[in-house]
Amino acid sequence: MAEPTLPTALNLPMVDPLPEATQTYFDICQEKLGMIPNVLRAYAFDIEKLDAFTGIYNNLMLAPSGLSKLEREMIAVVVSSINKCFYCLVAHGAAVRAMSGDPKLGEALVMNYRVASLDARQRAMLDFAALMTTASATIEESHRDGLRQVGFTDHDIWDIANVAGFFNMTNRVASATAMMPNEDYHAQAR
Image: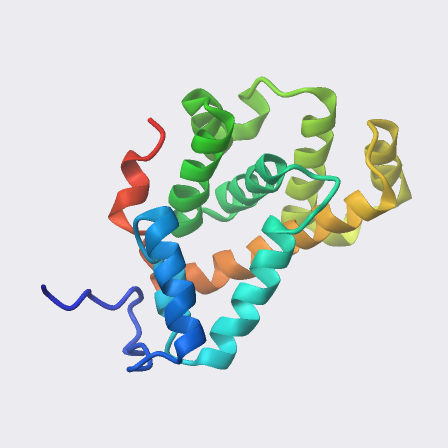
């Protein structure tokens, strides 16, 4: 079997061999996803950085929250669309398609979330994430109140802000390093 190519334009090969805990995590990814996401392979040149990345990702995207996992993926896609992050649009677009069972929703969020069929809660959440991405310094109490009016708690608003903030950071890293998504994402949930 051929050695996989590096997941970015940088010459930062994975630690070899991987520490046991990291190898176990990668094995779980392979089992559950059918692949090791390239973002994990990209960070695996430095296990401390990988652990920090996966720790915050798993907390924001998988831990209990007033936001559903689908809503968090929707935020990831909208932020990534604004930032034109190819990696995250492909990977998280596939997640939206899979979780929602609606390929049309995934495509709308990738191209222009404003054309998607969304309820008032989702629209407000994505409007806030978009504003945070394009002009975070303009956010005022009225924006947070708008979220409260559609049922979000202050904890939910914290989660929206943190998911949007995380993807603004990762989009920039992925774009700056030419991180490429795994080919398997393109065909998922279509």
